[in-house]
Image (cartoon, rainbow, N blue to C red; front, side, top):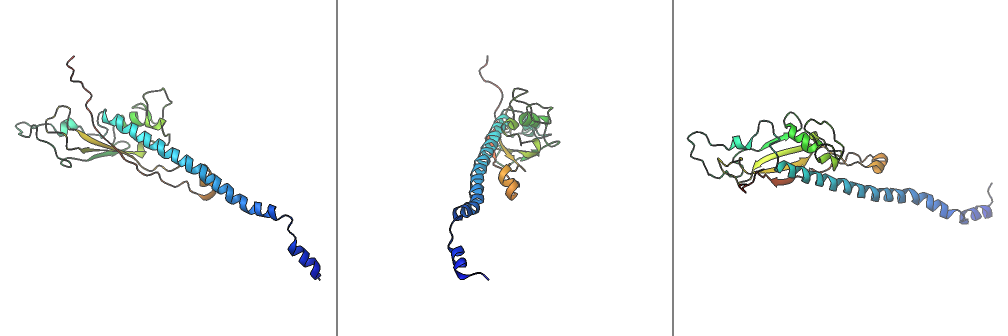
Length: 209
């Protein structure tokens, strides 16, 4: 039988309270600390993905079509006897044309995403041409969707084809969260599509030289 004075002494004893509080609070502090680190890393991945899309869209704007079988010159060419020459092509009158991965996309997508037309993986920096995957190595050709749309700026019979709006977006890429992914299973958080839109350009000069 426990004597009452001894029990009261045990209840009032405060030695070790700080250690107990620390043991209780430490996991929560570590989790919050990890969350701050992972949030910063996620923002870095977000930023790199946006930069990769901006780079890829800019390259697409000055490159040939990436959609297999689509040529803006052929699509907007004048048929024999046509009277549409110089007539503006309104937005949505033709298209859109979309591709994701192969075979829907041409080897041009490989060059923009991986650095060379024949590559199937990201090339080292300095090998081939600059590529999207060098900004975010998790981007592959199956994670990129390219859409060509009429911008409303072109006209039938325009040399070089109609002026196009090119939209590039990412698909199926998840954030890499090493800490929270392992602790809480948060590695399935998908990066938003974050579409980047640019207007196509002609690779020619009017200098006459």
